[in-house]
Amino acid sequence: MQEAVMRRVGLALISCSAALLVAAEASAQSSAPYCLHVYGPITYDDCSYISMEQCRPSATGRAAACMVNPFYTPPQQPRARRHQQR
Image (cartoon, rainbow, N blue to C red; front, side):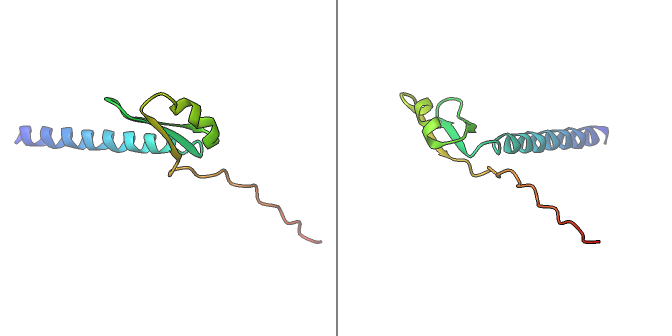
């Protein structure tokens, strides 16, 4: 019985850790509109480019491609305040 409880606790911890890692990765990828996707034994995305032209030199000569960041959300524009008339 105690073994089953420990197994459930372990699975719950693993699930929570995986969810946090996915959330952290998604938020990190939303920082710029373009990503460098690097292929290889360790495939990763570097989403720190503000233009496709800025990304392309980083992809040249390696197994990589520049792409639009699907997770990018542009910064919110400040809303104009309306002054109440008195």
